[in-house]
Image (cartoon, rainbow, N blue to C red; front, top):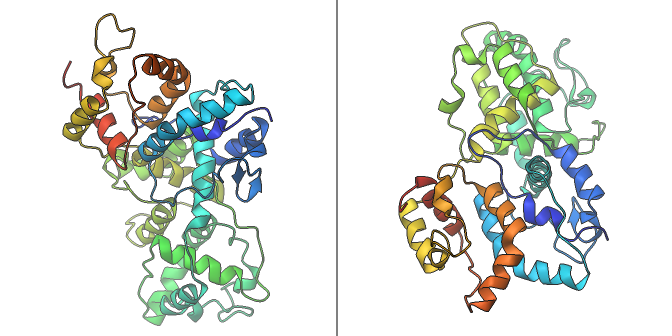
Length: 365
């Protein structure tokens, strides 16, 4: 085994103000190349010495929450690595970002979806008025068993988006309302359609790709002429939620809908989703109390302690910064704390987010 728990410690957050480019496919490759797969499973594949990193938490996790979890378990992981004569591998922020994307994509599959609910969506939203399951209801409407867009929600929304004008015209002819979807609707619909007899059986896949190509699509497709990225309220939304909102938006466009292929849709939705997903939601006043109660105040900001003044970098903290610092300096910090008989600080749910909010506030300098 080359590396132990390398992914677990670093892939926990991203730069909040300007998310690093990230790609879940690169993250999966890194998970293998760094040897993490020898101890941990991801998407059901890998070793069993450590926890399954694809099934630790549900899709409600945040980078700060994962940072707190990694912090709490760090001494145990370091001890295990020392027993195996392993040193922490140096992972860049970029690599950490890719690993985080791989973990998020893996967690996607833990969300319960229901084929019966999906069938209800297919009928209630009048999809069945035009699309048959094995034969065409309308000559121009492809039956479901010939759809090539059932691997992920992004692919399905891209296909729907590009046929929106035709769909709108047919709905008006039949007196039908535009179907409004949620992220859960999309998940349920895909499960139902994938499991139909005669339908294509693509391997369910979920990719996350965030980078300059997303901004390029946002600009080239004219999104920026009406929307400011920072004003799109997507905080707390999953990628499925964002994809569903994109579809719902198709009916409200006053201009001609631009064609967006699957790769462009993936880049665009990833760009919009990541713009706010990594923003913190902690309370700085609670964070100030945590800074004292966990005895951070006894070293950080104290002249001659050798510990940096954490508030000097106010505004720059997030999950990846905290965990990267833990990875680089944690073992030495643990040794120093043991010598001073200071207990290793642990964080309950929400406390790491509060601490990050406090450090970013710059208060107490």
